[in-house]
Image (cartoon, rainbow, N blue to C red; front, side, top):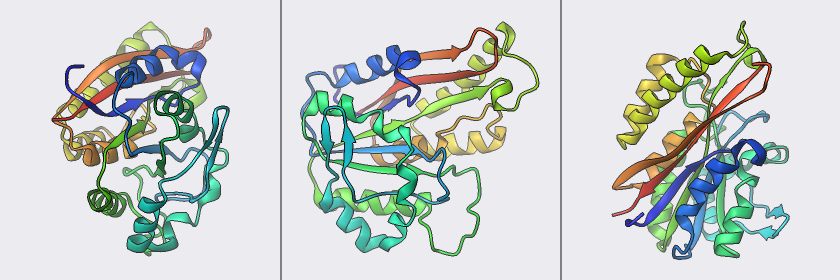
Length: 259
């Protein structure tokens, strides 16, 4: 890219099936300036928290420990309180943050991170009693915080797209017709995302009721809101399925381009 890449959408599919798409995304940061921090927004697959979930702890990786940006966390805590950290145990089994840390360490060394699990904005909170942090609250607070601390911030949206087939509750195995149908649906909504209109993307997903179960609408919306990119470009799109058609997951890599 001739324009600096300030953020990426990259998968959290396992490395074996998602290797090409991970590589296509992270190649955009080879030789890039080292940022002051990387904001990584993931998906809460297994946890109990229905709000935004963060931790103040370090992350263990095969390449060593990755530390949080403590200045950013302190300011977020001032704005939002301990609500952000109530469900931090949700991060223990969660892969959508950890799969990206080796890439970031390889590219940038000991860069600090701001990691959060984002809820699905299409699903109402169990109890909107103010005891958990909503996506709009978090996006507003983090945007203000990043302006206050300054420096260069990169963003990662850890996102898988469609999940179809019997493993995900559908009655029929995934065949060629279903693959074509899903790709058409995916590219339609990726096209909406590429318009760089976070609210419009969310409205489109609400309208179609997320019929193919994109699992990362929340973090895609949040990163699109925070990155303030001049443009977004699609790098790659793939579908990963098993031989029997029991499941198929689609993934993509996209680049947020700065001014």
